[in-house]
Amino acid sequence: MTTSLKTLLAAATLSLSLGACSTDTDKTKNADGSTTTTTEVTTPSAEQVGDKMDAAGDKAEAKMDAAGDKMDAKMEAAGDKMDAAADNAKANAQEAGAKMDAKMEAAGNKMDAMGDAAAKSARETKENMKAAAKQ
Image (tube, rainbow, N blue to C red):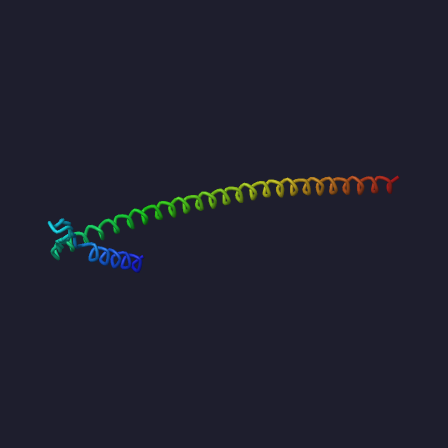
């Protein structure tokens, strides 16, 4: 941005120095039919030119500040969206993790129940075999 501000100030200086002079031209018809042209050139003081340059610089600076503020606001909004997306992704991951934990817990309980049933069946089979052997 520094380069463009310098370029802008150089352009403003050039335009002010080229356009700083004012002219007033009068054309007068002479009695013999010819025309006399009188041009009066008024050159502003260095202080007047400096004031114009300061005003142009202030205006450019204000525009650049406004553009910077807009960019900051857009970047802040983009950051907020990214933060919200990250929070949403984290919440979704936690929810998925909780669902997975619940499914794993249910599968574990089912396996425990199947193991208990198998153990019960084995005990009953053992008892039945002992009872059959005694007969």
